[in-house]
Image 1 (cartoon, one colour):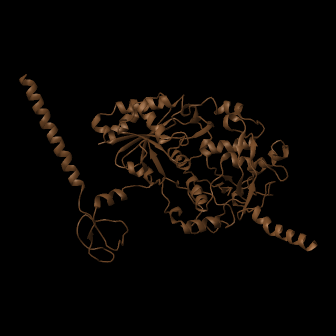
Image 2: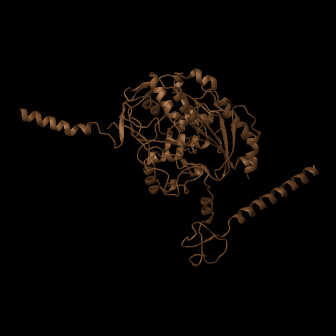
Length: 258
Length: 237
């Protein structure tokens, strides 16, 4: 009988990783409902279960990508999808400048490039709501937004210069097991263009009372979350072909319920 | 009565000459194109027989040159580089490059929209009404849905009929969610679903030349359509 129990235990141990199968380099994020800074009507949004890359995509990974998909190489990429600064920290089509580290997050990439990168891995970019959902965790709490220390730390990171030159994985992992959402680079999101707080939004957006200038602040749900304000503001000002020194990305994946 | 005869005679002759002219032009467009059989210089073509300056092989006549030239005619900035699949209100599956060759006037809307879209639609119709018939033939007015889930081809067809936009020069497109997001980003259009039937979105009408390059954007509601119309008139043969 004892032997039998041991066998069951062994079987369970073997099966366990299969039951909670995770893609390599990703962690599972349990979905939930939460109130982001700007949600649908600034109320509760629902995030489904998904997997997220533990680290942002690195320079080295991007080198491998452009080798496989030459259309995203610096000189071969087309103007519809990238601007002049695309990969401007690269020496040529396949090599980074000597000053760049392979394990730094890749930056100077456009949204089109980031989106295609993820799709070529069978993944996708996270939505704003998904990204913000995971990013509201600190090292111990999944929603740390009420903690003064959480905001303070992020703002301190935002102030630190040239953090894009750091290696990935140096900031502590958050309660989900994800690294570098804060403290390294900004990250592209799939629907960054759903943030309607551009300078022009006064004239070009129909629900203009919703999300611009002063009224944007009034509509926001958490006036203390300055760091989130900054992220939404930058999303609102981006265009998809822009590349920036401190803007990288990571991918996520839907969880397949087979 | 006699005058009328003369006037019509003059009109007919001028018309005849005009059509002659355009015939000639299209003939001139189809010139013979030669290319190195080894494509030493990539897609480079020559208008005369000769030999390749690199491998010295005789240049060969390129078959179907009109199509090749057109294909090469897509610039880096052309929206015809987008490869996503769209469904028209007639239920046909197309890529954007299938719209090549006409001036494109494009706007993003959704049919259940109550606030801004009717005015955007009105703007599009106003623009269309200002384009003379012979130019309308060479112009395509395209309404792209930002709500592909609701706006099925059937729904778009119904909307087209209801709004008297069912003529051949109107096209309605339903894309995939990712295709729509990508297209919006090419146009710098921002949108967000704020409830299952409501979106907030930028109000932008974009004009593309027949090669798919963005030439003009008009932002806002109830703005003067003059510049947009002028761009279309200038670009359309």
